[in-house]
Length: 223
Image 1 (cartoon, rainbow, N blue to C red):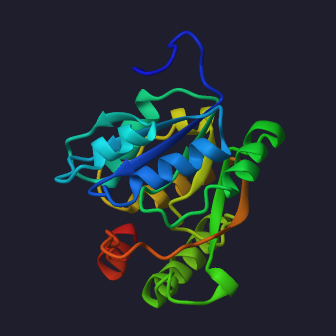
Image 2: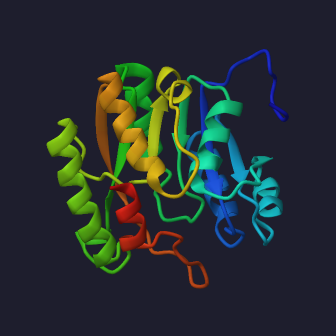
């Protein structure tokens, strides 16, 4: 991997799939480098049409490119090309609190959890940051996953996760869309992997930045 010593595996790699996040990705990179000072940050630029890659590099990230569109494609490339003892997957939209990664990575590295999910909580557990449509769809999918797989997961579609190396490197994944979060849950069920959750503040997107998730279309594809 360009940008770090290939003979020394980093302890923590923050991996960020990105498509057109020039307004926010720099802040995300800087936040994680601040709270996890020994980590590396790698973004997969998913064929963006803006200056996502430039903004990420300027903030201190390593940038790789995945030209095949789809978040699943970007995540698969990141988990295949990057090596670390612990992976932190997060979106590049500045909606997740980087400080939560301290506890999330501790649970992976010190308590041997294979996946730790950042469970989204809005300020005062209210507000408009986490749209009602997303919240409702997520609740339904969470109930389905608990019923089918018995997984102790309360935020099925959270894009903020810490993962062990063995979990990340055995994740097969499919190439398209937002199903990647659901597939990580299935992977945990198949592996009978220990899973934990950590509450994390979910922050409103900055003005001019828009969500890529379409609640009903992507929810149907996940099912």
